[in-house]
Length: 352
Ligand code: NAD
Image (cartoon, rainbow, N blue to C red; front, side, top):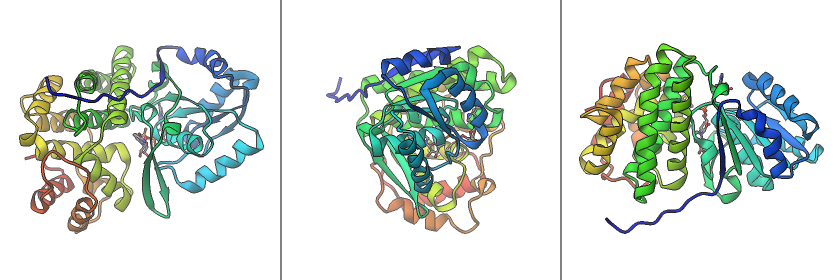
């Protein structure tokens, strides 16, 4: 075995069905008396129901969370924090809501309880990506890492099928890049393989029956493991490309990850045989890039970046931006190879 460094992020995780019933107890553990409940506008009702369940401890709700955590929204929410003398945050939703909670925690060091309802995995990371004047800036800080995660499978049952699929593949992307990360280590690789296995097993079952409780539990468990991977080791080409494309074209997060991932895997495959062996085992596919592509496409995901909103004739500019300040990657970033990669993803072709 090679030498390795493992950095475990602290955090308390409650997992199961009906677990939101334990939120008051968790708030008590944190000595939280004045909680702000956060959500997107679409999940405002769900957040209000949870706020009612929290009783007098939940003193306000703020339901204007948005994708990519715009700093103006955070500034608006900060007024609620001050006006209501908030002493803890309860984020109910996907990565957008978790992002808002993290942005407030970064500014205030308030403790966070997160109730995730997608498979984005942000709740398990000390990473925050904020958008200011159209630019996304990412930071990592211990204040950003949520103190408590309450996974309640029941809350994921309403996640629509298309978002279930793409959010699941978004989670897989974290684990794939953890398998070949510069800081890869045996513990995180265990979590990555188990996370991918759980999600790959769950998605076809969710696709055929949104209400399959066991499949929903598998997917959420996998999402947590993949989130831990994202929060523990550095990411590479796939995340750099998505960061670039997200910033340039404001593409929808989970869908964009799904369209890019098979191509990023294909690009790195020859340079990462051990990671590919684990990935192939987790997916039950001899060719992992094709395995991911077939899984996502077979479940109805849009595989063309053009169809997701990337403009015609913009591949060269995207490649140029992705190659500037590039992340570490197991294979050198070559202009020609990346252009070919993005052209394929743009058209929605199979990976090569
Ligand atoms: P999202 O949070 O934007 O959710 C998408 C939509 O689905 C929203 O309208 C939301 O209200 C709705 N929704 C969520 N759960 C639902 C449910 N169970 N039933 C019905 N509707 C539901 O999407 P996301 O993909 O979870 O998060 C994307 C954001 O998270 C991006 O901004 C991304 O950058 C960020 N992110 C950050 C990290 C990190 O570690 N910092 C990790 C992953 C994602």
